[in-house]
Length: 276
Image 1: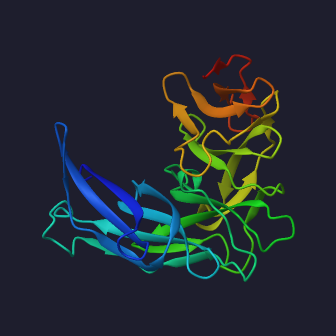
Image 2: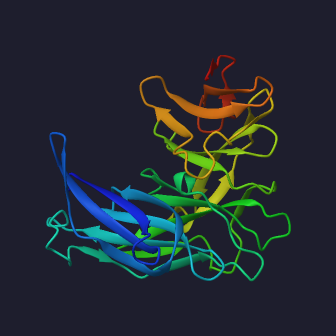
């Protein structure tokens, strides 16, 4: 609504504190506002989304407490792009989504951590829950009232398992044609996609659909931790495009899958373009 971009990062010049900053755009010129600290402790692996219904930004991150998975929401004022204004991004209280424990740090990747779904008006946050026996890839849904975030369940209760494989490399994309979020991940053998259906109070109850798998040994190691998003939805072609590494072909590839309807299993294309 403000026509700003907002970025979230850990500030290496300030003890890796969680920080956001807004910028306005004029032509090819960015005008950056002041830095706003939302977590006064070392943070990592951040994801940020804009909640269009509640007009707030939502930031997911791994923070203090053995990489406790956290989320926080904030309003962004009209002067947030003014570097002399330091009170125009207003944060609510941080929500501990999933606590870790000594020797069992939760794991996450910023590029696939958080995705907003306007149909359900929630953000889904995905991470590896290392307190559990199998270190499963796990998801919870977060709703917002004002700037108060509410999770699927209390912070010491596990979320919904996407896969029991001990892997945290994943991405999420919202599919407006079926109104659902899709999680794409590396199950330590093959790239797989699953559809999330939400219901219940605040649409925070999640049911995970049947996985649709790519037909060759493959992995998300192309992106690793700092490689950017691995999946994006194409609104013109109604496809989810995915970048990944095809182990059988020893090549980076770009491929896609489609989802016929809200109850369908993701169907991968046989076509793929090899990288160099």
